[in-house]
Length: 414
Image (tube, rainbow, N blue to C red; front, side):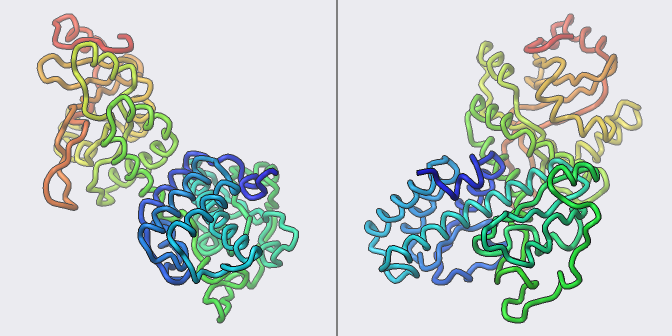
């Protein structure tokens, strides 16, 4: 029989899997379902009553197999029953009757499916820079009247409505949010450009402490706090993997990298206090292969940029020399790293030189492999492939250095 729950959400997408696994990485034994509150669920996995660490770890694996790997609800039910028997877990709500056990399994599975979907969807909406987010009712047979009242409302992403009302908004809620850029786009996703919010949308229910129509503890945006965490997790993962594998992972996660990068650049150039390196991309697979042919094996594939490269002393020197990168140049860096005009090896320093296509005068980024980057948030230094300089250079200059055998072409063309 088809799985009615996973069927409603279709196959998991990469942002959903990233959000789910970010949560599953932190296991929190709890006695009650409300031991974790609101956005704490973005970064932690719990099952009410599962207070044993080994039981919770096995439940997390079962959820991951069912949701992230697509095994589905039927597989989760089998795993759940086996784990209850294995760990001798008793006293949980629903135990003892077929109806109660079915309810319990459905709640665990559907809640993780729905909230990871919502968190991943938010990452996509942020990435897409949509002008409007549209609230859509899930179409349940027994609809909540307040959720129907919000159906079709289109609001800017920064509207306070989304802080508490971004779906799902209660146990079993299947409402979703869609993105649109124009009034025509709002209509295409089933929204109503002229629909206003009900007057009582901010009214608090004293029994739940949440706005009317929202369940207790659901008055937050699932995933609203995870976008940057997902990128940090991805960066750490790529840094820990062999270069060839990390190159594939980083390439597959390109939309998330681009979205986080644009925010990082904007805040760094505006003096927003960024201190941590930003993930700009990964070494292209063809570059990893070319390096292997000359017996150079990068430890990992990530390419990061220290904030000082954009706004520190080097940036000021290039600004005075009139060859500094513009904000538009910096924003194009992730795509330029994926599709560079040329990648060369500096035979004197061992650095990689990426030339990004921009006409006769192109941005040049020198990537120093195994570059130590200071981390002010903790003691010591971390090892990264880091950009150590970036400026505009003529192709003629690069060609001259190739003829002088200072640079060796690894990939692309001049």
